[in-house]
Image 1 (cartoon, rainbow, N blue to C red):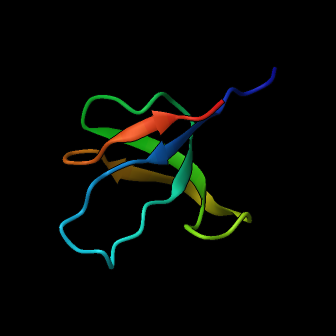
Image 2: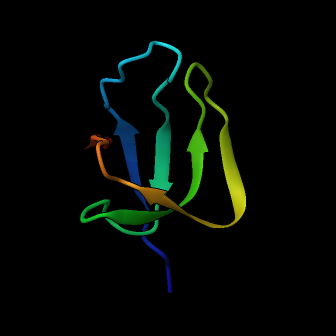
Length: 68
């Protein structure tokens, strides 16, 4: 069985310019208060970095846009 992943770009407008937005790979659609991510693409790069275990991201105050 294939697992489905969801790729979202963070579009949060931060008060500080020192906080870049990354692209995250989620195991579920990011909604509610938290979502589990398995990896991300650091801002300014094209390399996907995966975590050994899913990482729970707090979504409060953050905005994301689905990538196709």
